[in-house]
Each structure stands twice: as C-alpha cells, then as structure tokens.
Amino acid sequence: MKYFAFLILLISNFAFGQDSTSMEQDTTSIIKMDMADVLPEFPGGDVAMMQFIQTHVTYPAIARENNIQGRVFVEFIVDTTGNLSNFKIVRSVSPELDDEVLRVVKKFPRFKPAMQNGRKVRVRYTVPVTFRMS
Image (cartoon, rainbow, N blue to C red):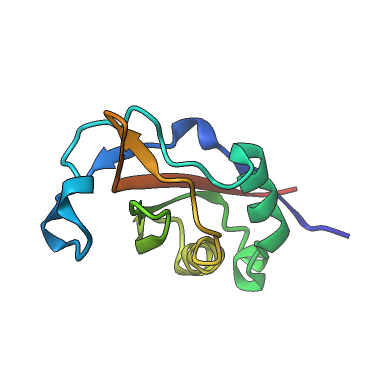
C-alpha cells in the first residue's frame, strides 16, 4: 500500500540563459539568452518525465514519519548535447526530500537540447516535484 502521492507540476518549467564562458565546447554553438525558442525536452516529453519521477522517487521514511510535505524545485543545466549537469535545489522543503529529488533527477536520460535561432544552446532548466501525504 502506498503511503504517499506525488504531484509533478511541469507547467512551471523554465529555461534561462547561461553564460558560455565556462563551457569547454565549441562556443559558436552556445549563446547567451533570456529564453530559448525551443525548450529542452525529456525523451518522450513531460508525461514521460512525470512517469520517470513517479517510478523512481521513494518518499523518505523520516519525511513520511514527520509528515513533511511540499514542493522541491531542482535546477540543472541542459547542454548542447542534451547532457545534464550543475544540479542544485533552488527551493527546499527538507534535506530528506531535497536529497531524494536530486538522486532521481541525476538519473534522467539525455534531453533533447534547447534551440535558439536554429542553433543548439545551453540552458538552465527547473523541475518542481511535489511531495504530498495521502
């Protein structure tokens, strides 16, 4: 029997520009931007990402015992090849929930890269994951 429910709200995904000076890739394919024309995409889209998260996330026992609930926002960089890096929690609920979200998001497969003016670009991507007791 499941003791919890997960809600993944992907409607608030963001892609923001990232300075390309720290990249070791060809800088001609990386631009600084405010918003990508085409956002990066999880293989199979948002529904597939929600299913991946629901399948892999385990509600931490200590959080469940203490009735800790809330929405964790995790941010990462999707580079021009679709690889993910620079994972960080930008809105925390508790260390246990934060750690669980990071653990799962670090397992994400390669994304389809973002595009700006017909070129692949590096962007910052945010995913909110909601933990709710049922």
